[in-house]
Length: 369
Image (tube, rainbow, N blue to C red; front, side, top):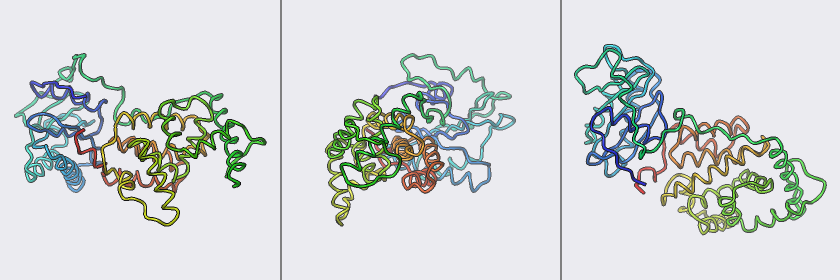
């Protein structure tokens, strides 16, 4: 939903930035692209590790390049959130100067360049500022109609929820039963521990794999309250061919999942995988429903919390990819690192981390809903 909030001055504008992000950034450069003096998005990147010109110019080039991908953008505001104090001059002046140069070269206006520190704030466009900067109290906003701000900074919110031991033991037992049922139905020997008998619930779960899109859709609707529900999703997400069906489906709908499942079958028979389905993995194609991706992310976080450690990499990697698809590269990188701590050569985790390192965002992040 689009909400309109007018800012009469720089202080009011700065009070809105955390509400646009949903958190209060730290050690960050935040860029707000504008179109006809209205914000059309918000972008956060880490501050360069130092003021060396090479690092500063790289960050400036990256953010201006991203703003240029927004067709409607005609100007921008830039805000530095830093631990550095405000002395005689505002910190990170070199970064703002590099942004100004690249914005001008790209035909973009720089409406304001600001800095927020633990002790105060200031504008690079102002002739002077008080010692230590303007008081932070000026940035408080009490409008109840505006979105709230979650506690913590950009790294908050990527922790795995805690589940009690009884729940986790139930899922571990369900996974053992599921492997036994897979062996019995498919005539193959799956890896990992097995139970000594075939559980009817596990047999039912194996049969549900024949209608994988329905299984994934039911998981979105119902969650994983039952141990076997969590077990079967963890089992599927640890298998790349089944995992990719889930990603395509959760970015689209059940029909997309059916198409992805059929495409996977044909690919295994030697046919070419359809480009329009493969492109989803790179962030191209129709813009997914953010609420649907949020639901899928919550589902996978629960699966990670419930599954034994050796069964977590698949669901964790999907958490990383979904976070990246939602534009949360900081969270995506954190989840991908968790995967690599368990499975260093995990393919999807490697891909997500390469996206983050290159500053690559999904194409749909630059298209308005």
